[in-house]
Structures are given as structure tokens and as C-alpha cells.
Length: 575
Image 1: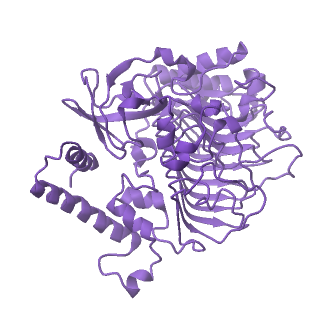
Image 2 (image 1 turned 90 degrees about the horizontal axis):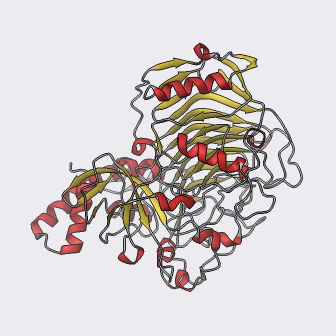
Image 3 (image 1 turned 120 degrees about the horizontal axis):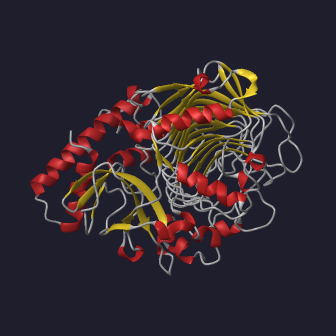
């Protein structure tokens, strides 16, 4: 079978040049359509001979049948089949050189401060070009944060039930007060940083130096250092879902390069309108006063190059947006991203303290991935944290078998500042172990800041919600999740809409029947709610940001596990 990029290349050429012979077009349609039909039948249990036997396997929504015919450009459902580390494929399992933390002075006795030793071992692995730092079973006390700043470096315990890091200090004590970029007394440790922090060495030093100097550090892929990027080439117009683009100058591009596709908005905000699905509602929306939202533009999408053939560049994922000349499209460099790094097989437990008042978090945070691409966290639990697991300008990374528990968290999971193509699967937010303190707030699985094409799959949420902190996240998927929907969404009004286009909730079981942020056909434009049990409005009730018809779909409402496919992400991978 031809590669996915090959199919879409042919589609793209056909649309642009309209010179493909009819026989070639029929051949392409036959190969692509036949492959998708066969795979769809395998995933849903329904083939060409639909009947009683097929129907017994579950209810297949009409929108899924449409999607299998049009997977890369469907109007309501995003293509997320390549989300995650290594485009969702299993890791190679090659550990590289092993560095044993005890050789650097780490002691699993629960009393010796082992943070310096663990960090020395991680730095040694980085200097060696990569490797695995192993921790024995037991409890390691850490009085400092653990920083992974070099490519291909992995911190690996003996399992989340056997190796524990016991953190005694918070990020405010260790680094300083991380104030809001808008001033005031808000703590940015509410949505950034981790006691295990995966971040490139240079970016990490810049961040911490700025915080100690009480200056606002940059957070996005290029952030407020956008003068440091360099244009590699300009890009010709292309359609959302295309795997390839034509560029003006391919000489600086190579297979395997990680580049940023950069799209700037125009004075009429047509890029933001496009992210919202276009049409009368987004065109009537007033964007100019949404200063936090507009600070996230230019939109920056990191992606690895799969091939370069003359002036045609093919990516490892399809385009999440159209490319239009009015948005000054170009491929640019960015500050170095952390790649190939990971954390496995351990529990991070913070000393138990009362949860801080809302937005005054001290920084007892779990694991943060910042400016990271193709990184992962597997079999990791965080306990008694302010904030659990976070993506900040992180992309193409995977959190698998992660768990948040203990006294209750502000953000159990957060995804912000232009984070794209990440996968969170087999995750759990456990019921808090202490009563809710007054003045605190609980969110849940958060996404914001023009973040796109992220997936939350196979989750158990004993508390929290499907949070959007505004900033118009778009093309994200939540699928096969059980949730006690008792959290609240956040987000300043200056951050703009709760949702952009192609947001999908698929097979969601809401145990307390609260509708807010679950059934989104009345909130999210050009989006889909499929297989959600019957819910009702109470608690926080939201109104749509856009006027007129939202062009959203609601199917199999009142049905959950009987929907087929059960898991939208897994079904897309099968395509």
C-alpha cells in the first residue's frame, strides 16, 4: 500500500493543477477507499454486508462512516491518528548506556537528599550523548527539582509502585516567585514548571534566570524571543489535511529536520476565524480586545520532515490548518527542542501541605514537558501536587499510564501555550484524600492557548472536568473516558473562545450526569459530540462564544459503550 502522504500528495496535486488523468484518479480512489473500507470494517465490526449480525457489535454513527471516506479533511472531526511520541508507535526499547544513580551518590533511604546525585547522573548521560539513569526500588528524598535537559536521556525507576521520589520543597522555594505576565499576585507556578522538568538545557537556564530576576520568561516555541528564529523558506498555499507542501527554497531542508510551520494572522483576523471554522459566527466575533489570545499568534506548529523531493516537502503528520498567502506562511527555525527524553516507572510524592488558594500555587508540581518534541512519560504517579502533568509548548509527546492522587490538585493535567499532537492515554485522576479547602479550585484535563490535535484516551476521572482555559484550542479529541464531572473551567476573558473548530468528545461516560463541557454541540463550532450518556445542566453553565449556527454534530446521545468504534483515536490509528 502506498504511504498516507503519497495518497494526499496525489489529492493535492489533483486539486491544484487538475491535470491528473482519470485513470490515475480512479486508481488512487480505489486503493485509498478500499484500504479505509477494509480497516473500518475491522475496527467497527461492520463491512459491506451490514445487517443484524453486524449491528450486534454496536451502533456505528453516521459521522464515523463519513470520516472513513474523508479522514484528513472532515469538517467536524480532526485527524489525530499520528498523535504522540514517534507518531504514536511503540518505543524501540533501546535503553542506550545505563547510568546507575547510586554510583553518583543517590541513596534510597528516604532521608538522604538524592537530588544532586540524580541530576549529576542525568547530566552525565547527556554529555555521553544519551542513556538511561536507573533508580533502584526504594524512596529517594529530593530537596531540589530533577531536570532532564539533554536529548535521549531517560530517568527510569523500578516501577511506580516500587521507586519513589519524595519532594520536600516547592518551585517557589527552589527558583523564586513566578509571577503572572499581566502583573498582580497570581502565581504562574499554577500552570508551569515541574519538580521533574523536561526542558532543553538552554531554555531551562533562560527561564530560571528570568524568574530569579523577577522578569517574565518566554514560554512558547519562540515566545517573546521571536526575533531569534530564522526563515528557512516560504510556503505555497495548501489545504488542511495535506501531508506535503511546495516551498520556495528547499536547500536548507533535510529529511528528519524538526521545523516550525509559522502562520501569522492578518488585520482582519482571518487566521483566527479559520481556526474557529469560518462562517458568519467567527466573522462577527470581536477579536481585537482578546489580548491574551492574540499573543499566541503567530501560530507555530512543530513538525518533522519525512522527505524532500525537489520543492515538495512531506511531513510526518498532515496539516492541521489551511496555508494561505495572507498569513505569511513559512518554515522557520526555533530554539532547540528536547527530543527522545523520558521518565518511567516511579512515583513523585510531594510533602503533604494544604492546597493553596486559587492561582497562588507554590509549585509542588509533578512532571512538566516544555519545548519538548518526541518525549514520553510512562508508568508515573504524582501525589499531593499542586499541578500534575503539564505540556507547555510541547508537542508529539506521550503520557501513558499516569496517575494523579493525594490531597487534591489545581490542574491535574494541563496543555497550554501552543502544544500540539500530544497523546495522554490510560490516565487517572483519583478522588482527593482530604476535604476541599475553601478558596481553591479544581480543573481537570485542560487544553488552551491555540493548542491543537491533542488526544486524551482511556481515562478515569474521579473528579475534575474537561477543562478549556479559553485561548481557543481546536481539533482536540477526548475519547473513552469515565468522568465524575465536578470541576470548573478557567480562563480569562481576554483569552477569547472556549473552543475552536473540530473538537470531538467520543464515548464519554459522565457519572454525575452534569452537562457542562461534556456535551459541546451547543458550545464548540464545527465539532462533534458522539456517544455521551444523557446529561443535564447544573453548576457552571456556559454560553457559546459564536452567534448563529455552530454547525456541530450530536450523535448517539444517551449511548456510551455501545458506540462503535469505542475509541476514536485507536480507530483512526487503524486507518
